[in-house]
Amino acid sequence: MADTVETAAGMSNLLKFMKFIGQLKRVPRTGWVYRNVKNPESVSDHMYRMAMMSLTITDPNVDKDRCLKLALVHDMAECIVGDIAPADNISKEEKHRREEEAMTHLSGLLPEGLRQEIYGLWEEYENQSSAEAKLVKQFDLLEMILQAHEYEELEKKPGGLQEFFDSTNGRFHHPDVLQFVSVLNEERGHHLEKSDGKE
Image (cartoon, rainbow, N blue to C red; front, side, top):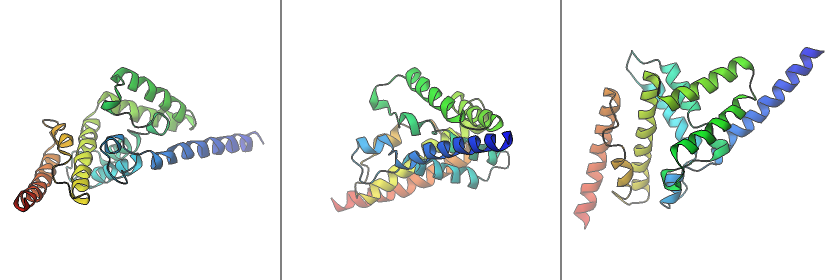
C-alpha cells in the first residue's frame, strides 16, 4: 500500500514537473520580442534545435548523448524565471541565483537519481565545466544567429539583426561549428548583396 501511495505521489510530482516544462512552449525568447519580431520563437523551440545540433554533430570525440541532455536542460529554469536578457539590466549573479532557485524547485519534483542528474547537468552547463558544456554553449549561440538569419529573411530585413551576429564574434571554436558558421555567413552575405543591388 505504501508503495502505491509513493508511486501516486511521485506521478503527481512528475505531472507538476511536466506542466512546468510545458510552459517553455509559451515563453518567447526575449531578444526577439525586444526587436519586435513577429511570432517570436519560444524557449523550447530554441532548445529543440540545439538538441538537433547535438544529435547531428559528426565529431567522433563528442559525447552526443551528453550534449543532447545539456541542450534539453540548459534553459529549463526559464519556465519559472522567464527569459532574462542583457537588456533587462539584471546582474549575472542575480540571474544565476533566480535560475538556481528555480532548478532546485524543478528537480525537487523528481525522484532522487533524476533530481541529481538534471540539476547536475544544469550546473555543468552554467559552470562550463566540461568539453560538452562548452560545445553546447556554442550551439546556443549558433542557434541564435541561425534564427536571426531566418527572421531577416522572413521579415525581408537583410542585416536588420546584425547585433546578434556581432555578439558572437570570437566565441566559436569547434571546427564543425566554425564550418557551419562559415556556410551560414556565406548564405547571408548573398542575401545582403542582393538587397544592396536592389537599392
